[in-house]
Image (tube, rainbow, N blue to C red; front, top):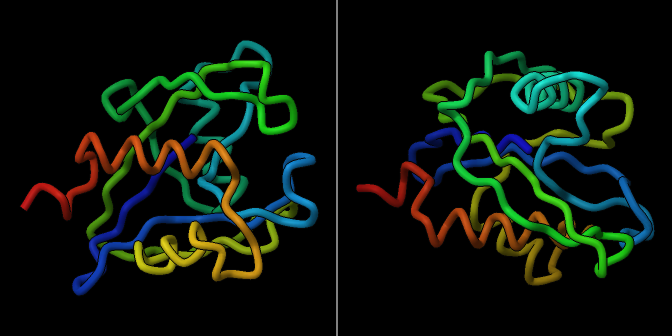
Length: 148
């Protein structure tokens, strides 16, 4: 999973994609770009590939961008646990996003918009684990706007 923050001046923004990955979302859910590892691919290369496939952005993701490896339950079967590697990228420039073929949208979302999604005020919910990961990252003060 790759969490990308842009310093939007008045309010920072994160990239969210709208897609349907599992049974917990009847139609579509919001979430951070990410997905599985293909073959012998490294975690970093998987993050790069997923970010590019889902948003059109291409970055060289390295181990230094890793901010957390978290246990998460499977969205479809919450009795199963896996681990997700979370990479963080900070941008000073807002780049154009291009959703991939499996994504309905790729957007820059303000934290106030993300809060509305979490509060159920958007047509689409947030993926179960992505909300928990966002809460963890906020608690760890990962985001630049929290450091000032």
